[in-house]
Length: 541
View 1 (cartoon, rainbow, N blue to C red):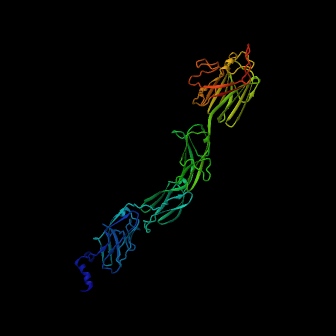
View 2: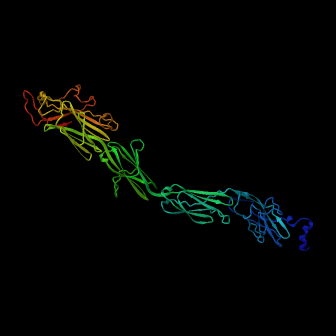
View 3: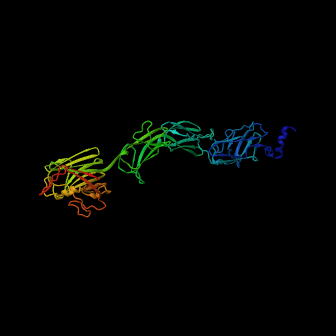
């Protein structure tokens, strides 16, 4: 029997030859791919009939090969399934029996089962006994950005965002960048994008995001990195604390700080830098190889005095540079009164008073109810005042107006307090030639005083309160104020009444001081009276 007869035999039996025979097909049963990516399904087939024109097709399971469009084919002008057009490609060749299928830009809708089909001029065959299942999962890949360990402030640096897991045959993805730092786009390829970044200190710890969008599927993936920008110390500041209270003040520029003498201070230095700066305190301006007084951020000054007055400098330093900030401490204190010191000269009373304070105090005299300050003079008195640095000096000369019970006081004040000292002029003999005596010393008692080496009694009353200075007339409103009252006269019991014009003094406020009288000119006591002269009074505790 000839070959043609053998071929026609199945037809005569009523069944096509391709449906009677089974042919081997090699391909995986399941293929898994992430959305938006590409996949190649390897396939090899066996078919004995290749006479005439031969074509290969891929159909989705359930399709009618006679009427439904295939998802891929090598047959020219063949209408393809709309969903797969331009993405499913049959790469094989009938002669080499290669039926491999390439799928690009895979979408979720591509999930399903597919079978292979061949057609020749005399026959056709669908390999329904060997199909493969395509499973599409969500895209979990992220763009890749090599993260630099550090970025130096002010130095441009390139960041590259790439998607090496995307196939080049697919639709190119679209790259976009988001950053707070100064940036510009660099060169670009199908699967990568370059961003030129110039970071500054304010960009430290900020983020840069690369976003990749696949136009065919609409899927978007992104990666965000945090910038580590290194920079030299900046924005050095000094915060001033007292005890556990909140910061009194924060200084960012070289400043002068007045501080009340005796107060405790804590100076906290802070700086913005990366890497963190080493904070060091110096006395004055730090010179080369200068010795630090503190190697921590906090400088403790337990009791500020004149020795601490001057400049303190904080240095913030890291490998990229250093910055300094200085604070000048100015110690201030209320007046410290010296005097008054009084003497009889040329038939008049001459008193001097000095005071030291910071800022320099102002001095004034109070004569009875009258107030004398500055430099002035008339027929009854003359006031002369001067100042140098923290010292203020004033002298008062009285030639008239001295009367019994007259009080004379010297007052010193500045913004931090006030202090005063009062001298009571007590009457002596009715009309001593030397004028009025300082203190309650009468002519009849003169020899008694000499024989007993009488000491003058100074009653000193000191009052210190805690309110700001308002006026010298309102004693209850004086901070750090004090007054001293000197009574020149005989020693009297504690319960004796105070002389006229003297305020009450409590037992707790009294302090006993002694003054020696030095008499340069002594005259014998006559029957009718006694002449007394005081040329100098010196006090000793």
